[in-house]
Image (cartoon, rainbow over all chains, first blue to last red; front, side):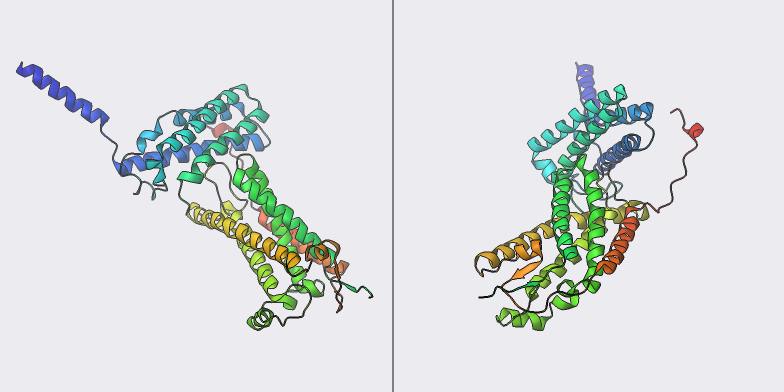
Length: 152
Length: 229
């Protein structure tokens, strides 16, 4: 009986650790890293669409990276208390992210959808279609920036 | 009654004005919509650089009523105008204030845009020249100013409508035809073809400078060095 209780307590403690929230500073860092890394990959796709040569493999790598981050559940990084604070830099997340959950969900899902589509289009190697999809994807980035990213 | 009219706005001034109207609308729409249109936004910004550079030259060397000195809104002139005693032609002192404000703010607006970035996939043509922190700050100014400019343009249009409806002074027609009806006075002089060409050259140089085409190309990375991971 005693050992069972101990086991239960231990399980609970471990589960607690697993679900423990990321430290605010780290959460902000992970967020900023994720977005920055996606920006690099957006730029790579753009270079391939606009530059003279289109490298299908490069675009696929970039699109897959964006897709992976988009589907990584970054929403979990908006932990309580992380509306202010410094990661690599002062966070520019607007307080509305933490309150207007419905709208955030909407813009985030719109982004996920286009990021998934981007990966699909990239796989085809059709430069024109990739260019068009990049525009749509960029639109969904802006959709969130406009309302939820503080201007400097 | 003999109808009188004078030559008020020269052709380059009118062309400048209406091209700027067009460019302004395209810039606002493309900036707000974003997505693929952000590239249009960058191009139209360069066009506005050219237009402003042209107008600045024209403000010194253009014809009579297009010159800055002619309508510079000094406090004394504004006072006279507000008392209702102003009897000049061309931009009235308040109109002059509006012109100077618009040109100044548009200059700041295009200049900040050249260094801006959208944190997505777009950077202004001179982004390379500044740090990301500075670019972000300039981007902030760019966003803020776009609202100020929209407000100023609305005010400008409302003022023109006010003059047309209540003061029975049609300001739009002279800006289209160049002729001001029912007035007498000095017709616009100066700013001939030669000056236009100089102004165009200055405008082209400004666009070239703003486009960043002169920035050294980054050396092409040796292909073999791209790691497989």
